[in-house]
Image (cartoon, rainbow, N blue to C red):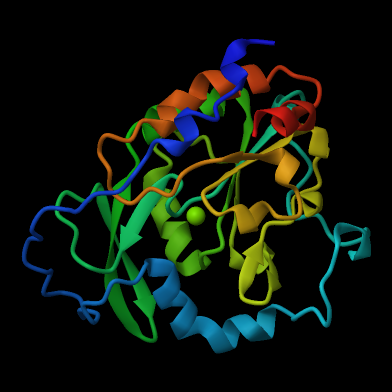
Length: 253
Ligand SMILES: [Mg+2]
């Protein structure tokens, strides 16, 4: 096994920093209150009644064994050309990008999102190295973006984000297991062998059902000196070749 499989040191090195003065806001959209909230929080507040209807609350805490094993898989069967690949599940917000309803100078792209009948611009910053990271991962893995955000935001963002067209599946909030205000990404529902499933997520609660399948990553906002995604490439290149990712991730993190 290559020594690059132990990434503990590089995974805790990133931090955020303040941004430059913003340019004038676009006159074509309704500005939102100037508060320090993330896109996900705003969408969650505005869509909460709808979300609660879609996501049944568990009566008591569920374990993996409690869950219905006959539940429909979240992913379609693996495509033939990816049949030998492992499945890399990537979180979106604060793992690959950071989005804000506040004007952000130097945003990589801007996406209009409809909230309660009004369109608002979402300013998206890409984590340094993310395009190269995605390109290389797309050569090695079946790629799933699994986000707790709503599709009305994440879908148009991914349309612009996925430059190399390497994202094979998109999963949104309704695919998460909702429990006490936390959105858990239940990897056992993907329809893939868990020996071959890896999740990268900046929020440990997201993978609390399957911590041994996780590669922790730090939360990213706008630090342009961050190199975590690029630093992870050698580790993930090696992980793509092992028989059981759990064996490796159990001792690496
Ligand atoms: Mg996240």
